[in-house]
Image (cartoon, rainbow, N blue to C red; front, side):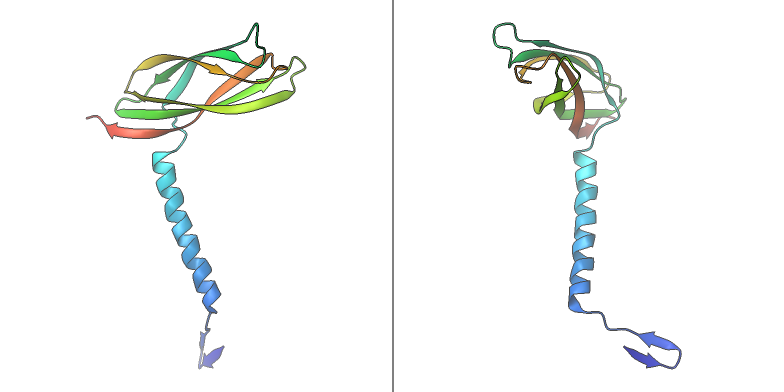
Length: 138
């Protein structure tokens, strides 16, 4: 450290500069990720139902209706987070599922797909984890 009059000059080690630069790059990457892969507030699950398999209890069928409440944004590649619970309420499994579709402004669509949960699963819960923003219609 060098002191000149009332001004104090401090030489920072190179590792401090590297960490600062890395932090800046991470912040930029997170901002980009949040723009294109964020959990959209405009997408709403209006109905959901999971029916466990009758013959093969480790598999079941999801019936999900998703509504895009945005007036000008299209969303695509919807990623659903799936959770499964036993009769006692204990979480017994989780999974994810992606629908590679484009959901336009004001559009509502029903999706039907298979999902697991294990042989102990008796009920399921679903949420939209993320979706990519498409082009803004205007």
